[in-house]
Image (tube, rainbow, N blue to C red; front, side, top):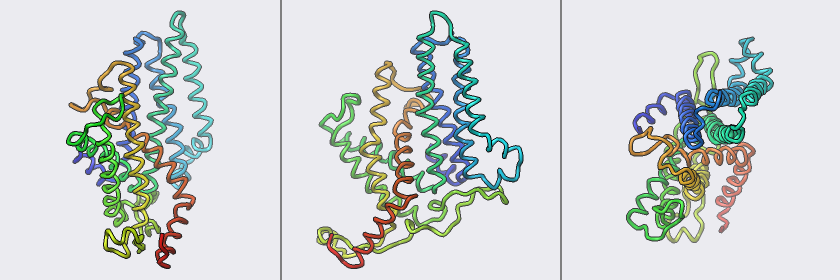
Length: 345
């Protein structure tokens, strides 16, 4: 699986988008199937068809917005697409409204409550899977590094927390996951921060990972070539006096993005696991061990991506709050001035 993932990264952004879409569909299928089994809703009229219809509607809305934003030059050359983009939100609403009316028409006496249970189940599942996967792709367009560092940090935290918990775990962390320990949680945190800091250093050196993904309508290819922004240009920083005695360095060279990696890794190790705890509580509520048996020995796809969806939302909020509007850039420049003036922090 790791080899296949590396191959997909090598093939480029478009293949990563297809991978994200495939994972989204499979996660949706696993959660919807649990609903069918728990509520014994196989005999409800139209409902399986309506569930997949709503998935298509929501994907059409989100990915249509993406096409309009990132494929503008391609759309302008085709009149049919211009019509679809111009009235995209109206078409999306009309499609959803059609499904809504079909649901109302499918209501059957003595099954009203069950049908509304499944209607709500479908919409919550759409919120969890489709919205989050759309944010993953939005992050990817900002640069592959915003895709790889968060994902890798979650994976690193999962592995290192298990290792520290296995060898040193003594104190239970949370009742939802009896095998999780404070020792594993703390060890995973420090390991993930160090990993994210080092991993981002290597990725920041290559345009392929740091440049925003742009579609070239002339070559019909996604391009990752640019002049790296200030985030990915090596800078010299003054080491705080307290750390100088420990490290023996007065200055250090690093990429500003590495400071962002600390924030990303911190979230991945402190808040990200709560996505897994949420999934554990969900499975306990319905008395199931795994979401599915897609991956032998691991369970379903959702079992492996429960923390990734929460991470995707954070990264998107982080980019829009601190990167796109320059707040963190201002803080970076302040730190640079402090280091140049050698002001003690």
